[in-house]
Image 1 (cartoon, rainbow, N blue to C red):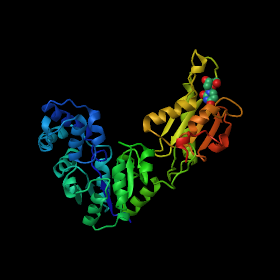
Image 2 (image 1 turned 90 degrees about the vertical axis):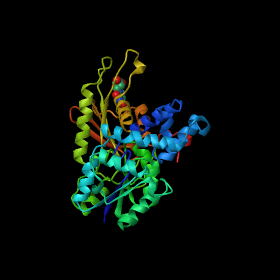
Image 3 (image 1 turned 120 degrees about the vertical axis):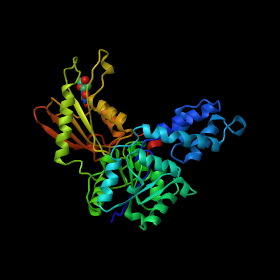
Image 4 (image 1 turned 135 degrees about the vertical axis):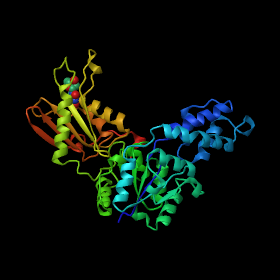
Length: 387
Ligand code: THU
């Protein structure tokens, strides 16, 4: 039984990173230290002290050069409310999912490493109020920050439930570890981390953002929704990456039709003035269910030609980071329909599983289906990536 949804704040309900960093840069400027976005990046999401102290350390700023955590914190406290209210900080689906949970009789809580005042400012800034949550846990309530399990355990104790009855929504490896440590189901968003890294960190499911959580109207339906997006198994070592299949039925006929349409549409745009052999390809992301397509693109310098399949996977990686491919569709005007060339198979193997479905079809309607491993049984895998 699912009884509560526990939300991390930054990167899950609200996108406040840019605001925090802008104020951080402003603060360091007041003590004559020039800082940039990348100086703060490694120190995000681990609480305010780490945000300032660790960044100061990396910038060579200390009490002798005018740095003081207390002064930085005060500066931040003064600037933040004004800036966060001006910004459009709410992430897609945030208010919608919180309301859907409450309407369905599911408790809600926030579990953020940020100080309490900031968590409350953020809740207002995204158009929600403290009353929308049964409990709000902040960095002020715990000594040990994420990745320790403490903040989620605190939520469970306050709500009087077990970890198995709670769904945690997170966006970082340390947050995922914290939620798993407390025994909760963890759904990772792709707002900050890519799907493969989230899976490796232990997430039970990955969705693009909160708006992608399937709709429900009761705790039972919420459990089904969670189940429908959860990974089925630990994944299969094949190419360089462990691609974990989702529970969605990716190879249903509806999805195959959508994939074929995407590949055929991309083929229409093929740039093939030399060979006149037009190819379109589509790949299906296992984590998000999104389809990415590509066409072949030839060049005066023949060797610079890029095949449709490699263009499709490049687009997928550009959008999602390391992806797992659940299905590949290739459209050509050949009989039998063309398979991906050996070079493309090698490139696709990096992100595929042995049972990734490959649908080859021709414009005249001929179709062949293979498992990826039937086309390339032994992909080359770089020694350090081998498992
Ligand atoms: N081509 C592809 O797009 N995919 C393949 O796997 C085989 C070949 C393209 C590349 C070139 O534009 C044309 O087909 C002839 O080789």
